[in-house]
Structure formats: structure tokens, C-alpha cells
Length: 98
Image (cartoon, rainbow, N blue to C red):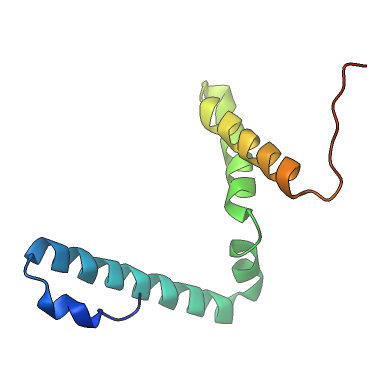
């Protein structure tokens, strides 16, 4: 949302108006950051928009924290990766008892 919606003028609740304005501000800042990043560093922009890029990046980052006893976020990332592979991979992985 890069513009305040037309119906925002009709809203009586000032808290809701403030939330909408804040969301528009965040959207504009994100758009400007991504636009400038795409222009200045296209490789970084490509990495940001890689499918499941954040999940892959988080797995690497969280794996470093396992030595500090923080294993749960790393495990959750691995679960998301496995779920993605099992549901989107053209070659299904079959596990049997042999």
C-alpha cells in the first residue's frame, strides 16, 4: 500500500487511521529500499527475491547458534526446508524401511 486509501477519510477511529498511516509509511520505506538496492546492487536484490531465500539464509544463521544451546530456531528452519522439498520437488523422495 503506497497511498492512503480513499476510505481512510471516513474512518472515525484515530487509532485505526494511525495504523493505516504507519502501514503506508512502512510500505513506502520498503519500496524505496528495494528500488535503490535493485539499482545499486542487483545481485543483492536477486538474493532477496530468491525462492525461500530467507528460510535458506536463516538456516545458515541459526546453525551458528546451535553451539550456544539455541537449537529450536535451527530445527524449525530445517522443518520448513524439508516441507518445501517434499511438496515442491519434482522428484519425490521415498523413505522405506529397507
